Image (cartoon, rainbow, N blue to C red; front, side):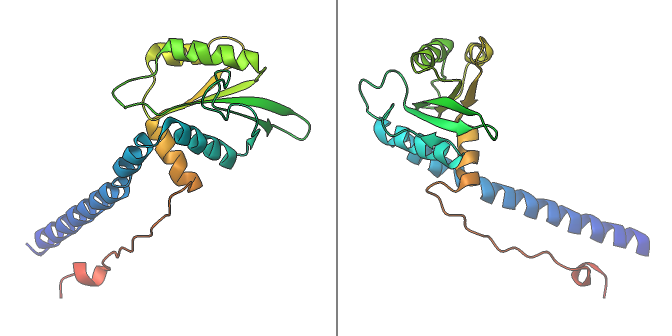
Length: 185
């Protein structure tokens, strides 16, 4: 009987631990909704500026003369250079689409961006959206001689948190109960 009581107590304690972990996971995810809404409320120009700042945090040296105007930008929303090793520097084109999550980016958008990459002789492309990409868009991004890196809304939120771009990390203090509270008197 004593053994059964101990097992029941351990089971209850582990159930509490699981619920606490789930609550923490939910709390950690709570920031994503407001951040996505804030991104969706940015003007197209400010979203492009935001995406250039993110790519700059990812070690791309942004060229402030290419792709920075809202009109006549040649089909790119940013352009820069990344050093891939000790002696090689590559040109990077950036495309930014702050779209409603219900409107996925399709392959014609990828094809247009690839054409703009050709115009600027970019070796790499980064396509960032608050939405998602269709299967055809993903396939188109991998076709040809230059792969285009796709960053969808979920990945974008993760990168913003990782690089702490215009967000401040708040530490949540939690406590785990020691065995003292779990053991019988």
